Image 1 (cartoon, rainbow over the protein chains, first blue to last red):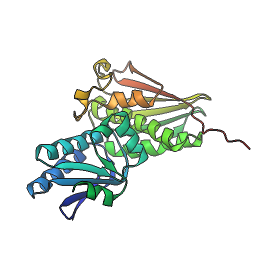
Image 2: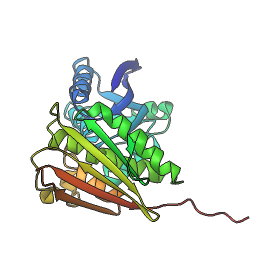
Image 3: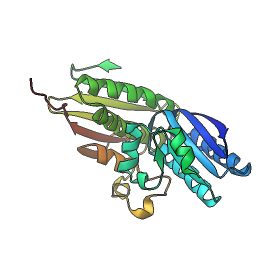
Image 4: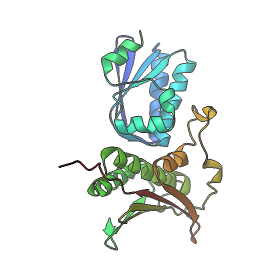
Length: 112
Length: 148
């Protein structure tokens, strides 16, 4: 997994590329979320447009980021979720936890 | 990858998660060759990746020198996949259950549920060598026939 943060207004967008599958990805994602919080960021948008698939450990990484943001008084949402990942979110009922959007503009507006 | 019996394909992987992309590519290639649609192929591959990830991390403990074997058998009516590790085995029963509302925000514990959800059949077997085999099976799914 490659993760590149960028600032769009008061939203930190994580552009993720590759697969989210555990191992070093776990620490990399958590460090990025903690860094956003430490810098005052309370709105994180995870762009999954470059992610082909996620396994259950990858889902756990996203959940850990979600709960870290929530505990810090912020929010973490998803954008550009493929049909395959959307299916996995649905079957695990995580679609009831994560707000997901098709387009970045729409996702950014949802934080207002 | 070797095609050992005409309808069987076997893949042997080192215990490193980065090789799961190869498992995904081969799994999708196999079922797309059977004309499965993208959704069915993606779900099938997600389940196989889950089994292989479990074998790498929980079965083999990501140990160098231990391998994971993924074996596909293509039948007229179904595709079977065996995923075998070289670990010490485990009891899967506590993990084979429905997800509850309390489970939703837990970071772990979904792997077996995902495999069972995306497959028609899933069973665990203890290998004589001590490792575990998970056997997955999914019926052949063909795109809807169109008139004309």
